[in-house]
Length: 192
View 1: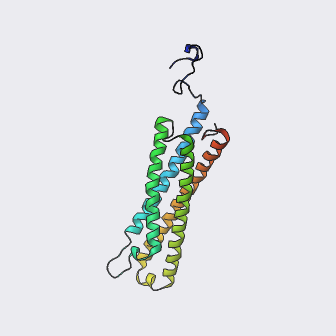
View 2: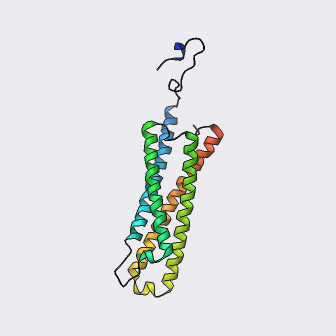
View 3: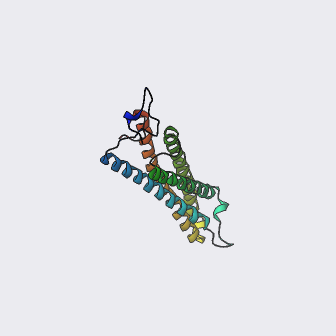
């Protein structure tokens, strides 16, 4: 890399020649912040995948009800599967940022992409979990849960895991919102 004194008569350094100075404390804060976001994304992935798997395997034979017979359970399964795929993608983006120390896409697009998708998928999980919980409560009042306790119990577990995935994704959305606010105020996704 060339020093600023190496440039002749009005030449300016290219983008690659400019360096960004971060103190050690600022670099540690940045790493900690990125690690926390990665941890939240990992937790969101784990809980949404577990919820989708629990819902997918919730069939007890020919005499018992199947999860795909109920619209709310299908909605919960699809929402959790979508969030699991999205979380894997975002974990890859986080690992990219760790290894390359830059965003995958231009910074302005990246902060709005993360925030917007975190918001949309959080609300998707919340609505799917609420619909599935309402159906599970209705089924508990009827004959379905007295005859098939295992089906209802596994449905409740899948719904609970989906709500846990929502919580982690909502926390991740708060951090994405912080990045957007920092970007709007300082022009960078970090306040450092």
